[in-house]
Image (tube, rainbow, N blue to C red; front, side):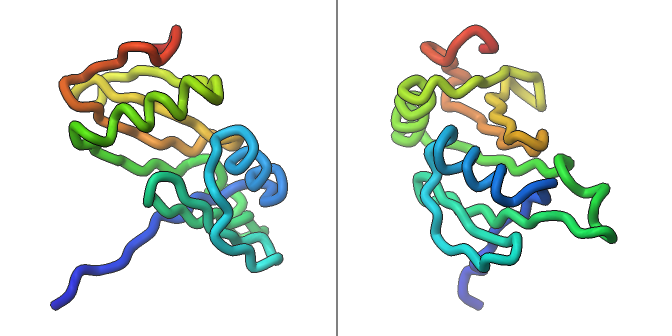
Length: 125
């Protein structure tokens, strides 16, 4: 069997607001947009589908979390990206010290950094 191609889906209250946040604030690239409340963004090879809630999925907005473990050669580009854009981050304990980015709805991107090195990542770290 070949490797599976998988992406996470985050539900958001307003797709247009989320698209602006992901592309303008967090620096993700827009990969595609269905123009009906579903689009995909990517950053450093990580792909994420964003889906605007409907009546039957309204309670899902802001409850997503994805975990990304970084290798030694991956933490510096992310650190530089975060610092250059002034992206607010937090540090939480989630098995070990964890870097957290949140979108406008509260969906979470969790990162484990090599050697738990949070140098230069701001006040929340």
